[in-house]
Length: 137
Image (cartoon, rainbow, N blue to C red; front, side):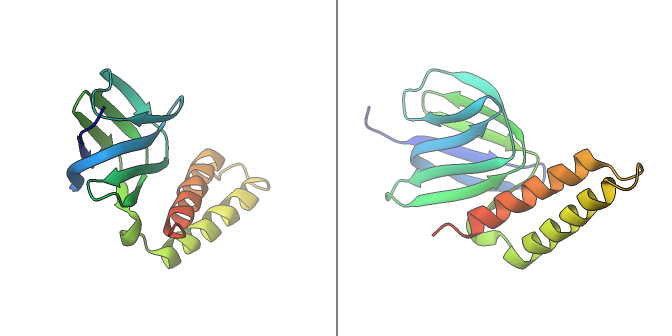
């Protein structure tokens, strides 16, 4: 089916994306999903990952999302993310520093019971996705 879909990616702080796109691929909690115009409506939770989309000019774009929800309608996809960043806005040095801190916390968690290993693992996952997305060209 030809045509574009309106994509909105918003966080509690601001709108990250608001444009017409050709296709959207997003990290659903049960697996990656794609949406083209005319898609059957659905609502799903998201896991930390990469939203990929092709803009109206045919350029592939990438956005980091840290969980949230997605609502797909036949002509619109709305993503409500806990946090999100466009690839070009990711600070690679900061992401690498976060990776090192999370890896240290995980290593320390093996020796201490007061370190929250689940939070450290989530922080590591977020850092690795940011590093991965920043490297996409």
